[in-house]
Length: 134
Image 1 (tube, helix red, strand yellow):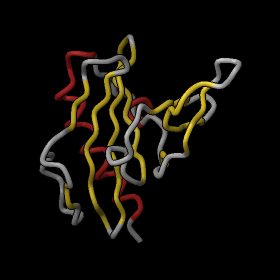
Image 2 (cartoon, rainbow, N blue to C red):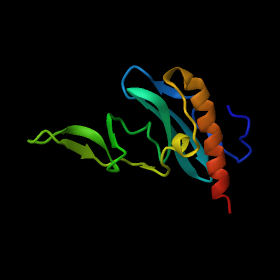
Image 3 (cartoon, one colour):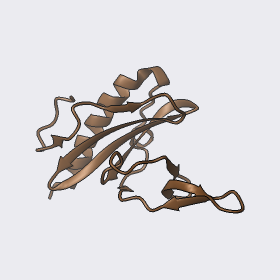
Image 4 (spheres, rainbow, N blue to C red):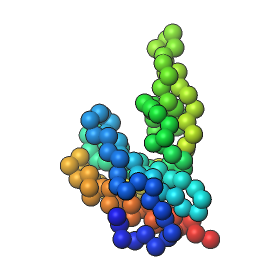
């Protein structure tokens, strides 16, 4: 835990849910704040660095696999393929509310620096919440 959690954040998960066997490797940690559920999302794909995004909603509860195209903004649960080989996607019940906060803050974490990336993500999440305070 990050030690800076004085914002009445309730962590839903005791720790990070780490899915590291696939590429992209993905890690999730859910938190509740002011009646809203957020998912902290770490992603590592083929090469460094780790990326960190915040989603509003529960990325863990809706079974994947997810197709996430950050360039087009297209996100969905893969249900199959159409006749041209394109994805058939089901709408997700969550949405990204930030871009890559590591990139925005000039933070760079290599593959093996996962624990450092997790701590930094928690701290950035708390700072992001503080910016939302009225």
